[in-house]
Structure formats: C-alpha cells, structure tokens
Length: 201
Image (cartoon, rainbow, N blue to C red; front, side, top):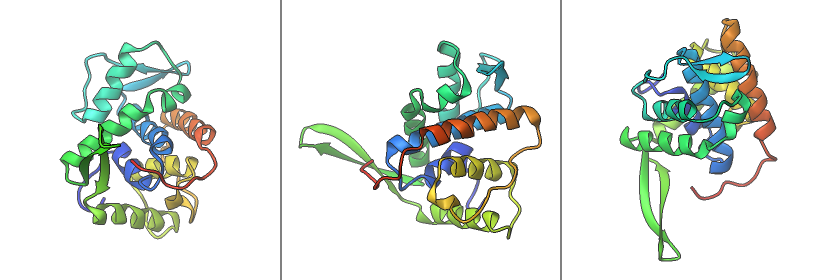
C-alpha cells in the first residue's frame, strides 16, 4: 500500500469519500467488521457476530470501539451490524485519519449557533494512490494482498465509483471468513440506495 498502511475501514472511508456520510457509514462499518473477523476477534456463531474474547484489543480506536459496542450489545447478525449505529464507526475512523494527517477537521457553526465539523482531505495523494491501486487491481495489472482484495470486494458491493472498472478478485480462501464477507456484501447491497449527489460532511 503506497504511503504506509491504512486499516481496512480507513481505506473504505477514503474510497467512499465523495459519498454522503449516510451512504459511507455502512461501507466503513462493513470494513471494520471484516477486519475484526479476519483477525479472529469477531467470530460467526450461527450467523451472529460474536467476540471471541471480551478483553481483546487491536490498538486501532475505531476497531476497538466497534468490538466494545458488539460486546456490550444484544446479539445481532452480521447484516444488522453493517447499519446499526454505523455512524459511530465512520466518525471514529475519521478522527483517526485526522490524527494521521490524512484528513483535516474544520470547525464551524451552523446558523451561527450550532457547532459542527467538516472533514477535508489533507493528504490527497493518499486518496489518489488508493484509487490508482483499485484501478490497477480491477484491470488485472496487479495482484492485491488480502486487505486490498477485501476492501475492493466491499466497495463493489456498495457500488462505489472506484470499482466501476472491473470485478474484484477473491478476497479470501478461508471458508469461514468468506461466509462472513458474503453476509457483509449482501448487507451493503441491501443498504445501497440509488446514487445521489454528494452532501456536506
């Protein structure tokens, strides 16, 4: 990955950058769920996303926040978790990207009263590199690692513009993870509305 590693949900956040946050949030959440499943921290228990160990942590604030949310909530299937409180994960990923210098947070007031924050790309080269990598993989010019293949699989399921040029390669040969990924893909297809114009962040 050019310019240093990004987590799976962070990659999806940048690939979905031009989308309204209500569309981007499920994509980023699906990436976080896939990342936790790939690490073995969330396991499939008869269709339910279940923490393997309540004390496990990744060191990534967005992933650890989601792991804590799943641990403290009623049991839900993978598809439900793609949209349930998905904005929390999107916000956590954005905060981490601000800390990494990839995004810049610009504070302002709505109607001169209510505080709000807009996120702006500070490192456009990083986002451009991700899109270039996506096009190279989808065209067959390069072979991706598992994280990139998973990101492109989820991006395609959400119908992100970055995946319009081809079909993503298989993301995993592990049957357990492939089954989870299929659930996440299905949830993203179900959650994707008709394309809309970008809105404010």
